[in-house]
Length: 253
Length: 205
Image 1 (cartoon, chains in turn red, green):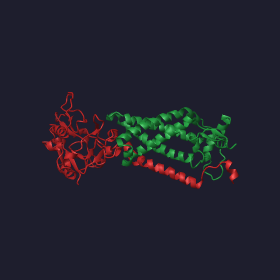
Image 2 (cartoon, chains in turn purple, orange; image 1 turned 30 degrees about the vertical axis):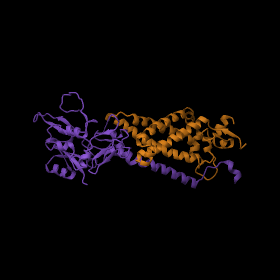
Image 3 (tube, chains in turn yellow, green; image 1 turned 90 degrees about the horizontal axis):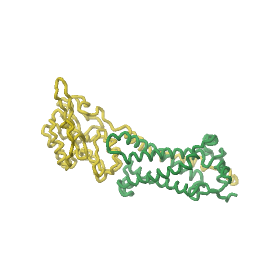
Image 4 (cartoon, chains in turn green, cyan; image 1 turned 45 degrees about the vertical axis):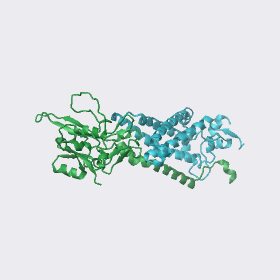
């Protein structure tokens, strides 16, 4: 089926955080006790009980002394997902038909390698040391429903649908930058920005850590190619030169 | 004279050798299971969850056994003489169908010295980085250290595996009669004279 995704339009967001509440409700995530840090941004970060949140970016200027940006933070469901690349447990992280990166806690072995390979600092671990993160409401979208966050969003700042259609929509609306169209083989959460991504707190060119890419492309194949190569060299040596001989075998000749 | 057997290694050395060897194979097999998502290996270990614990704790056994080797073999391997250099330059006599005329060798030959140093270096790197990956804190701030460890763990593993395949070849097919050192611990005196002349002399056999 067509790849589905979320389109985030921060300029349409009013910061009501209904998406956060709806996410908690659908995924049965407990509330968190937090401290007043002088901002309505709350909780301060993603956690095992917070799969999505609105980042508040205050950008006061002379022209607009109260400019506030509300940016939805969540798993980006990368087309080329670092977490899936590095995960050593088959099936712990998997891609759904719709293109979401979902997880299976029963298969997670709690190694936390996905944390190191994620370009967006998304995976969190629960008290049982199992991965937890946004899975684009995999259980809802597989039934043709809209993810809880997008379903509840009153302004259309979060929209769920066919990825190509959403990209077309954002471009047609004339946004300066559609974030995540090509990065990491296309993100599953694309953003319609009117300004540089940096201003919204996003990495301009996100990528899987080079160490992980090198490991995947070179070190993984080298593990068996090296083994086979040395074994082949040994066979060749045995045929070409045979076992080592010393003087003691003189009498055999 | 040919039937005169002498002791080449002690019982504890044999024990440590096979502890290293068996733990190494368990680590390699489980490691391949993780690298390539091999479900059959995972179930042989009782699931990937349990395979992770086994991989980690067998790693501890490996690290301890490796540490114990250093008392005896590190000084031996570090004593690198001009005979060793000459031996290496001749390829140890391995690249000729004729009989070997190589410089006299110590308790272990030049290539074995290098192999030991490589095994100690890479084995230590694998052990230390393995512990970092195992006990890492969850926060993203530790990512750089874990990624570096992950890289070193895998590079060392790849080289280690190649070195061990070579080691197995040289200890069996390439040198018939060598494997018994790590089984009975003894070798014929004449056999040792040819291969470890300096050591035989030093030991006064």
